[in-house]
Length: 121
Ligand SMILES: [Zn+2]
Ligand SMILES: [Zn+2]
Image 1 (cartoon, rainbow, N blue to C red):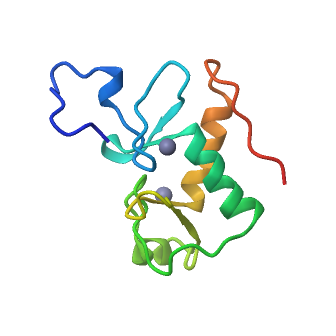
Image 2: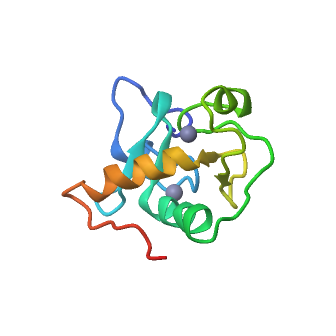
């Protein structure tokens, strides 16, 4: 997401925020971009990965993924009915689905600018 009031013709790093913790982008903050400028940082991705993949937390009953915009109906149509998501504790309107957690984790692990690895089981 962009900080409210961002000049879209002159976007600065500090205008780009993680949708899940609202931390601004910085040299030491990895951000993975989703649909339409939605972002998740490496810190939130680590927590989401731990909750969803390592602890198998159920997450919210119904949700629309902030990163891919798919809702329960979309997931059911794709044979992914009931796939859990992780809601940010600080901003519970931001939820990421399990597939986006896996995709973002794979992308961030290949990012040469950041030493990010999936948390161990
Ligand atoms: Zn974050
Ligand atoms: Zn998703």
